Length: 190
Image (cartoon, rainbow, N blue to C red; front, side):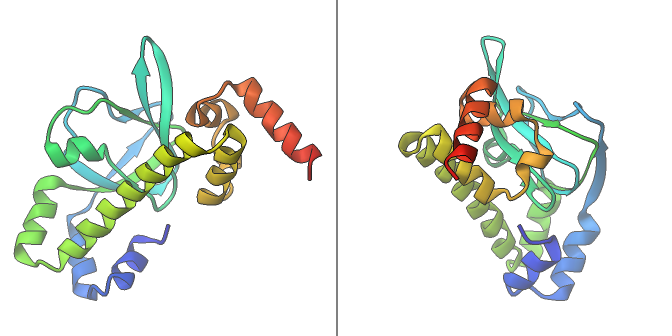
């Protein structure tokens, strides 16, 4: 994804919009394994990953299932909770020391009320999360695990160097051993 400044330019927003938004950003540094948000809490922010990496996961019967990764320049939030202001069912955890910049729901809404041009940014963020969600859902319905892995590599180039095989396997809905076999078969068939 583009840097935040590039997003503003792409949306046709002025330098003053970027500066107003940037002035409202707060910074947070997460240590490895520290949670940005946990299940049961209400998400009141949208963040941008400045550096580091995070995973989003849900738990069921004590088992964790990864459902997204957030790398540098990605927006990060528990979006359903953010929109509905109801408790989230997911967790977002840092996989390394991670720095995020974030804006609170209250501050973002104030910016939108002051200048409707900020709705372009809100729509961009909404579209980004919607598209990510749809692609993942469709991938599980239509693609094999090997195809899902290929899609992940195309969507997040270099992710295999940033995220452990264990977490990638969980994201794909397979066991780490199956991921190793898929990677071996892909390598042999090339």
